Length: 177
Image 1: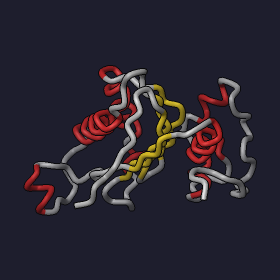
Image 2 (image 1 turned 90 degrees about the horizontal axis):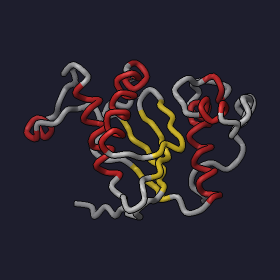
Image 3 (image 1 turned 45 degrees about the vertical axis):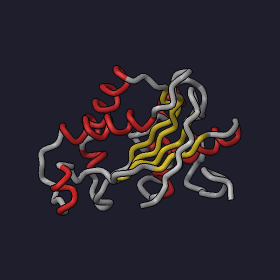
Image 4 (image 1 turned 90 degrees about the vertical axis):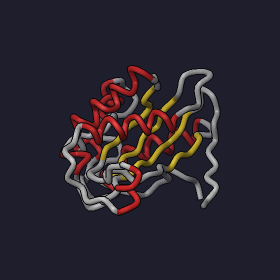
């Protein structure tokens, strides 16, 4: 079994990618209210700041900052996934392993995280979140994707409404090569 190593920095800031088990489904946008409720319910018990959040049909990206002294993002993701799954009818097909463990077949078991290193890294990952619907061909302009904290950041004056213009995907987003 692989030895997954996670960086646990109390009060740290991370970028996450979380995927549905069935990547062809549109479940996250079809049940966006259930996802929002799952996040809100989790934040009531385990607070965190949402620096950026974008929900696509089959996966999501987020940048979170945890409270000082707290590095437990795994519990937060487990709770979000659990609350979301409980809000859905049991219709997914399960393999024998998931059946034996009493698991649902909605989410991939793991998620990907990246500890944000500095301000430049932070900016690149926020921008990656916001450009992602354009990258996947869901819209041609960032402002046209409704399931994104980009709109909140426009209201706060952090980004202009027309940020990234009309889908020119040049630039550096996410991980530096």
